[in-house]
Length: 388
Image 1 (cartoon, rainbow, N blue to C red):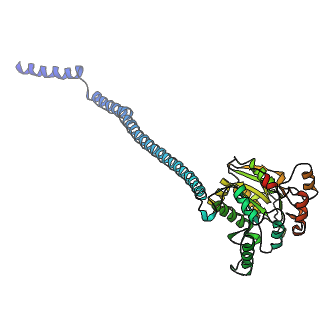
Image 2: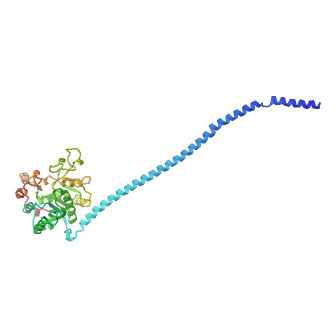
Image 3: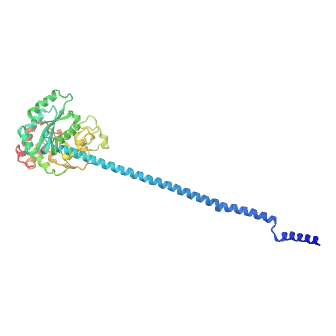
């Protein structure tokens, strides 16, 4: 009985396992499904999220690096810009100080250089070794001599000198002849310059630098030795512009740029002025022009870097391009010789300077200067009765 009962119980257990439990097949299926589900879950929510987190972290790091680099670049650019501004400011300050220094030196007037007095204008008559007769024709007409020349300086503040350098063989016969002539008339200004027709731009530059350092004047004039001058009219003309700091006075022109070699006034650097047939910028004709003290000082300070063209009037005009300079076109400085200047004098419009355009001066000036002075001159006493 007991045996049978135990056997029965065992049989009932197996039946229970078969009807109430889970079969091995289903367990295997369940395991496979769970594995697959786990793989899908990990792939979708585990690894992908990890990648996203890593990507976001890397992106943040990259953005931080880029931001730092941008900030560094901005700082560098800011420093470069600031440094450039500082350099420009210093450059302007240095240029200003150089100008002021040159002016101060000019104003310092050692008595040995005749600079204890303030002058109205300095007139330099450009001349050459071969122009002795031209100088004599001027001395005999419109230029005071001897005591009158000194009186002109003291009473009117007007300095007049013939301007010349030295020969290629300094101390030779040509220089000795000028020394003898200067002892006789005492009306020369000798420049540290080698004379030559193709060196006129250099001579003009040295002239303005020299007179600005030697005499403290309101104006500095350059005139050729074959031009007739009325000193009283020159003074009256300049007086109208005395209050202007930077003024450039003359007969303004704009002639053609001559590219062809061998012609008079050929411009070797013609290509700088554009296409063939172009004209120069406006500048005063070379027979006579005047500049104020500030401009003469500018030339003196910057003489080592100012470019010199073949023609001195073009060179002077180019030095003022880009500067805040008033150009004054005064046609009384370029009257023609008689009958033009004679008619104007009779009409009450006395000319300040007269010459012939065709000769770039008075044609045959040695022979004709007296005649021009007689009919176009303001009178020898006019300068003494003119108040400046």
